[in-house]
Image (cartoon, rainbow, N blue to C red; front, side, top):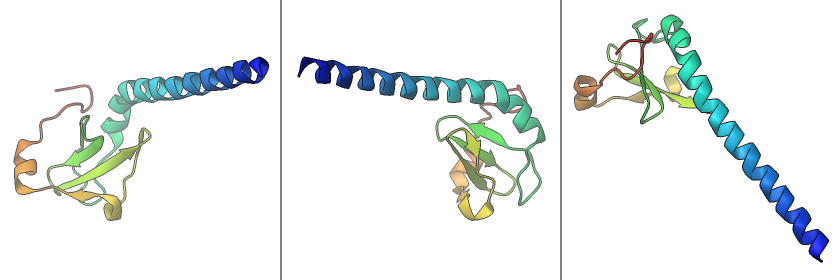
Amino acid sequence: MLVVFSTHLSVDAVAVFIYFAYNVLLQKWMVNVDKELLSILVCPASKAPLVFDEGNQELVCKASGLAYPVEDGIPVMLESRARILSADEKLNVSPVKRSGKR
């Protein structure tokens, strides 16, 4: 019974390690790649530049009023998946990350 319990703990430890590594790697990818990615990505609807909203994990386009989700570190650049910004959001979007500039 003790052997099964310690094996169970090691499986849990591996699961925690994988979960932690996955999340840390995703965060590093977004920090390192988003500058390059944002320099080439544009809004599919308006062809205007995008701003990464870190809090909502979205790429926001003020020109078209659309916010594209970023799921597991991958931008989903489909108009059908984009969220329509409210008038207040269009005015209050502050550039968090765009081509390495604020």
